[in-house]
Image (cartoon, rainbow, N blue to C red; front, side, top):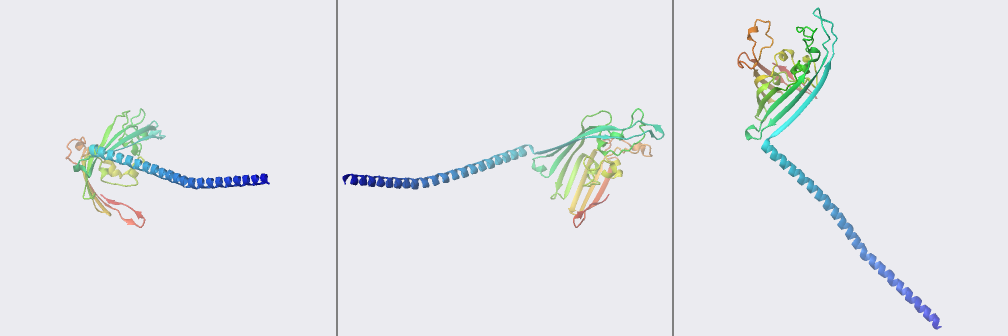
Length: 303
């Protein structure tokens, strides 16, 4: 009987101890759960702070870059640099020209242009900019003359507008084609330009056919042949006024060497394009009407 009582007491003690252990484990788990949630919350906040810090660093870096850019612009103004190069080949099969035997005038050529636009930082030039174009190139393709068996006096085609500014004697030196300053007035409704440029800067403008490099190559499609024959890079002054979106008026005056008077009664008036700048200048004016019909638009020029 005593043994049974002892066994029962021991059983009760074990059961009581196990119950307390389970209770202690449950209490520990209850204490751990808030700690775990707190740790997860802190980790989330830490990730948010890291993301915010990265964003702030990016903003700071951008702000520093903008400040440096502003400081450089304020100190040295704005300089834009553009450039391009073209390598081309023209082929033509010719046997006789004007009854004379002629070699095939086929040939290759290249052009390289570097364009610089500078906007000074001085308040006086806030609405103005300087423009410079430097050119190098050689070869006139099938338009060339003067070959051993190719009469110089024969014009083959003269259609390769790309080669207009090139030499044809293995002369690849740099040539300052354009250098002029433009100033805008009255919210860009009036601009004045002075320097070395072409008359085509103010006459015969066309958004779709004025670039021989990426639009048309043939002369008749680039500019009016009459104007093109008088176009030289010479001292020039011109102005354009645009009183409304529909209308633009331009005037231009430039010196000319009168390149096509040879063999005419005016032959004695030929001169260097830098001599007697105000003697027999080229003068031009243009009115451009730009109407829109629905989704279409166009330019009608009178010059």
